Length: 340
Image (cartoon, rainbow, N blue to C red; front, side):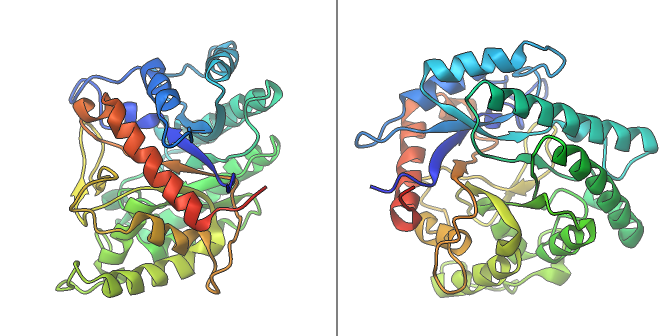
């Protein structure tokens, strides 16, 4: 049986799109319990990826990492990638906002180092985005991209001091990251060895459709989205461009539409793993990211994670949801895994 990549669940879907203007936040402990309880033919999740966001986490609490380590150890889980809460600042904002952005990256890397020292984190990256909207970015695309790149370079230098890599998530709601071509341009401009791309199968599928960047769309507006060959060709174009940068990977499903809830801007809709309207063949299409252009495994990351943001709480609080997710993850590993 393949035991790599390790299979992780994400805990930030309990936070993203939730809150006072939406549904209540799902407690971290509830998400952890359901993750640990999921099982498919004797296979369980190996770990979790976590968003270091309040109210799940308080990065100003020096005991927070130890509390997390104790919780995951109790369930025989590990921690992988971390989401830095950089939205208190902005990579494209004022000097103070950019300083705050870098400081939140520093705090996240420090937190990750503590988890390593506590023996519960052996792989994974720190995830960032520009924390800037597409509309604001479009007022000065050249100048704003340069400023974002400069902030990212500062963040990379800080992360390097902790031995961390930063992964920029390609999502259509983040300025300078909202199309596949803009994403490549930004990564090349940052020019640091410890930055890469975090691919999410739902968000990156929206890249092919040109949401927020119609000039970079790959699928024509009248494309038949039921035609798998059409979708496969579009996915190949995106993955050929971004796979060399990819250091973190989210398995997900998408139906070709955008969605936002709470205060989160619209981005690629995360569908349930069993959604009949999903346009992706999850196990097959994950291979575009996990294998190179010659079909060989890249082994570029030791774990993969499921991302399912902005599901209703009624869905997320059902144990069967997590069993279905794990089943999809297992199929990905069976198709593209390896023995470590």
